[in-house]
Length: 284
Image (cartoon, rainbow, N blue to C red; front, side):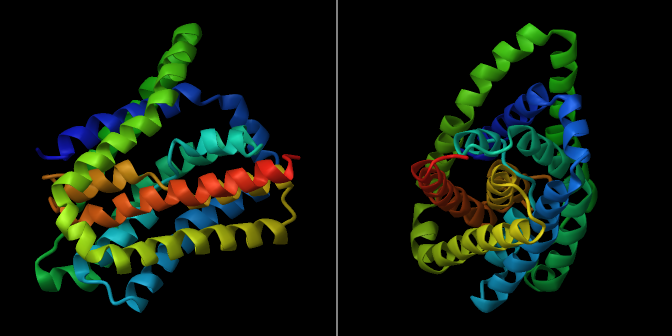
C-alpha cells in the first residue's frame, strides 16, 4: 500500500477543518498585539529550519534524512496545536491565527528552503525537487481546503460548527493510523535509524520549545501567549511533510518521511508532557 493515498485525504481534512475554525475577527485581535505573532512566526519560519539544518550537519545525517529533517522543520503548525493550546490554557485565537498564517506563508517558504537544501546535499545522490509540482500540490492540498472551510463557515455557520466538532476529534486518531501504517511498511529502516534520528528530532523539538519560550519572555508575552507560542513552534504539520516526501509528483521517497513520522511521535509525547506540567502547576 502506498501511504500517499492515506496521507493526502488526511491532510486535506485537517486543512479543511482549519478553515472551519477561522474567524476573521480573531485576526484583528491578534494584529492589535503583534509581538506574540511575530515571535512565533520568527521561531517557526526562521529558527526551526535553521536548528534542523544545524542538527542535520551535527549528526551527519545521510542526504535522504537530512532533507527529511529540514522538511518537517519547514512545514506550518499542526492543526492539533489549537487543541493543545486550549488544554494548556493558552490563547486559542492566537493559535488558530498562527496556524493559518504559517500555512499560507509556507506555501512560499517551503519551495525556497527545500530547493536550497536539495541542491546542498541531495542532487549529488540523485535527489531532485520539482518546485512547480511542489507549489501545485501545496495549493491544492493546503490552500484550497482552507478556503473551502472558510467559505462553509460563513455560508452555513451551524453546519460548519458541527463539522468542526467531528473533524477536530478525528485529527489525532487519523494521524495515529497514518503513523501505524507507515511504521508497518518501513519498520526495518525505522528501527535501523531510530537511535540517531530519535535523538535528532527530540533535540529539534526541545530546542524549539526552549528558544520560543526564551523569545516570548524577552518580549514580555503573557503566560497564555507564551504557552501558545511554545506549542505552535514545537508542533509541526507532519502530514504535510509526509505528503511532500512520499508524493509521486515531488520527492517520491517514503524514507524521506521517516524524520516526520518520528517527529510526530516525539512531538506529541513532549508537548503532552508540557501540557501536563502546565496544568499541574495551575493554568493562569
